[in-house]
Image 1 (spheres, rainbow, N blue to C red):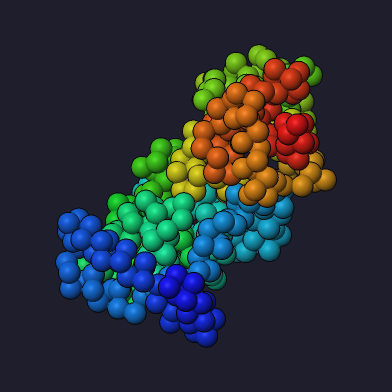
Image 2 (cartoon, rainbow, N blue to C red):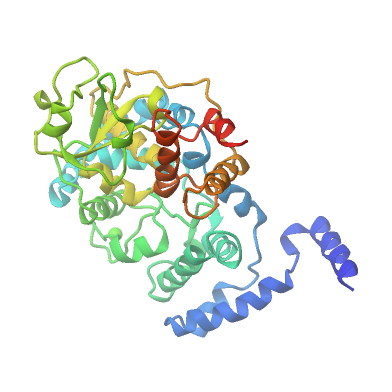
Length: 398
Ligand SMILES: [Ca+2]
């Protein structure tokens, strides 16, 4: 029976992938319907929204290969802060200057940061994403490692429809359900989107005033402060303890300067920034790559997308868009190959086998994995930078 069913399922999937009905998905949809209606979504809105919706396998592939998490940071930044994106951003700053300056003043968010996010999220509106948000989110909610995210965003999307903010068919976006010029996920839309032009709609798909104001509002509520920098590249002194590059270690800038950190040119950081600026140190490619001191505005950008590579791209692109230099002085270790998902999992498992606690074996190199890695590096007499490289994986595996 089981074999026959599997053959049948394979046959239907290969004949007409988009029409294949997954019985597990139907059962899941039934239980999710109860969850959504309990959360206040009407049965009518739910049933109309899900008419003809099936799983989109492509979403799973993309979910496992998010460029800001799976590519080497230098390769991600090459694309994110490309000449074309810099030129495009400068043109948009000029073209939308008056609208941007009204919004900058209203929300206290620097125009170049809004433009940099716009550039990264949709190439200044050129690529809004054409995935059906309900289908994409239902796919994530059904199975995989982001079911909780998918369910919450799906209920958010249904509420957008139910409240009349957008029609069912207008909910288009990325494979992960992020929508409009600056790619808001549904719950972000519900909490932070703004109707700037006062036409009664919070139109993040077509109205640039609504787009910029919504983005600025989100950043402002996330703690962004105008005229404070996002961060800067720093030069580390010889013999520096790399373990200080830890997400939990914040110090006033003056303390980092006292430890010997400078601008890449050797000039004092205090010439450029307020000595009291709360800062933490990041080494996105470990001890062999560039170091950055990042401030609270960097944290606000991370609320937009929890990827260091992304926040760094926003910061560097914003400098260029504003006519300053976003060039990094220190070279990236470009010969390093980034670890694939199974290698990242193997690294986490190897740490567990050696008695360290990196958290779940999920292939995501987060704060827990970095901390465990640093503890092992320290014990092994290696630079404790917490950077997951092939060299480290080979050293960890017996
Ligand atoms: Ca509007």
